[in-house]
Image (spheres, one colour):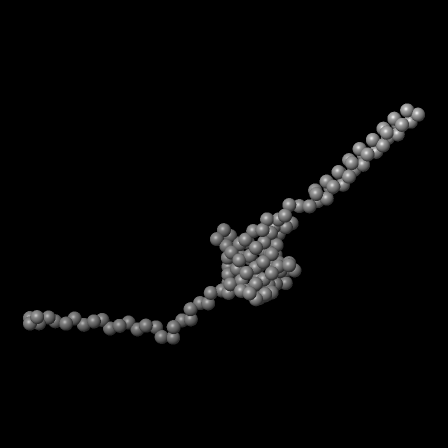
Length: 141
């Protein structure tokens, strides 16, 4: 009888250790699948190209050009108005927040400031003023 109880306790002990090992392995697998949250980057510059069909936007910055890809979650804002990517034009000043996913820069938000308007040429140019004439001094002063 003592042998049967010892064998039963040993079998239960081995099964419980195997159960804990299996549970720990299953918890570790989902943690490995999750990637670290992507770091959000910000870029400010002038739009040089927009392809609404391909959902891409190229921004010229001081450090070089940055190409962004928009997705369905990308928010395009002009002031407080929500806009579409097709509304963004070359020459517009933008500030975009993006993350790098699968080798692409995916835009999270794009804030648009309209391109500065060029000053209209003046209809009349200033005419050169006539040169002042020199007055001769008279001796009475």
